[in-house]
Length: 112
Image 1 (cartoon, rainbow, N blue to C red):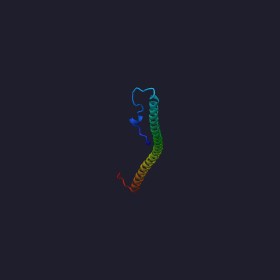
Image 2 (cartoon, rainbow, N blue to C red; image 1 turned 135 degrees about the horizontal axis):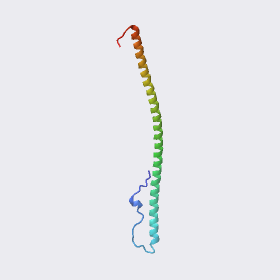
Image 3 (cartoon, rainbow, N blue to C red; image 1 turned 45 degrees about the vertical axis):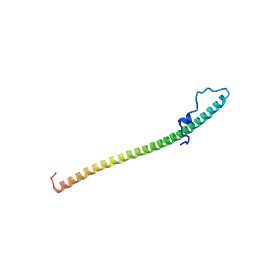
Image 4 (cartoon, helix red, strand yellow; image 1 turned 60 degrees about the vertical axis):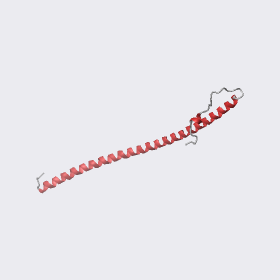
């Protein structure tokens, strides 16, 4: 961050509405120009700092977007695997029940 903090005092480049004599107008104009240059420097430094900060935020946003994309892909793969396991569990449970009934019938049990 720039050391040149913007303050009302730094941005104040015109000192007053006094009548300026012919011989003092060059001096006043030089004073105004110097103050305006200092204000412009402060503004430029702060704008450049803001540009750097915005660029850093954009980089972070891109990184976060990439991370979120990877997480979404992993979540999709996890859901597919979970669905596969659920189906496999259901099929295995049904197969075990059928085998159990077949064994019971083979042994002559008719209690179901």
